[in-house]
Image (cartoon, rainbow, N blue to C red; front, side, top):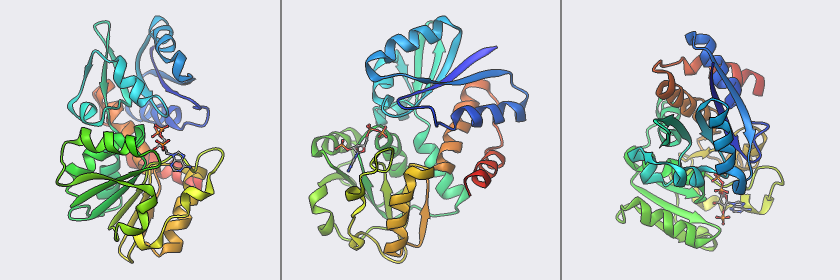
Length: 276
Ligand code: ATR
């Protein structure tokens, strides 16, 4: 049996093992997929142990996506643009890294939710691994402008620089959120809603929104509640959590590893029923 895993810290509540197991049942693929908790300082050693035990592929979640990028011998173009990796494949004794988060998000929004991203002004809250993963795909999907706002401004600057599209993608200060105008797309890529919820982070100005705004949280489950509550209070037209993105990024990774495209909709529907 080929071994796969998701690495994160924390990782116990990750849905990825369930999603990949469901895809495997659908497609008749035999695999073992577990969750491995790895602190950042132990990540390289944990991956070595995993390979030693027969590991051939891994997903990577917070806060390890940038570290995963750094350990790869080769990376896809979209991983390079993100500077972050969420999908690792062991090939010829080396890690190959890809990032399926951005395509996963865009498939969820434009496919499942039938929303058009083209021409929207977008504000991306956060500049960590999750934000890096989705930013290039948002530009590719045709947003008019991508304003990156992060609590620590240097990380926002670094992401804007890495995107290399100064006409459309630039950074602004969190303290200036009131002054940025309104947006057709507001994305929460911060981790402020996870674990010890920092309510002050969701004290966002309603001036960011209009009645047509699409608000997206890359988190799902309880971690998405504070931002989605803000979006509803602000009167946003749509408020979408990250569950669909999670399933879609997993489907792209599954196809990369196994050469078979799974039925993401069926798995999404089953998870959403449990969530409700
Ligand atoms: P991930 O892989 O989920 O992106 P990460 O790389 O640790 O995880 O990034 C977490 C993001 O959430 C960062 O943008 C972080 O801001 P800083 O770079 O300033 O740390 C953001 N974040 C976390 N807690 C926050 C809070 N209370 N308010 C605003 N932003 C917060």
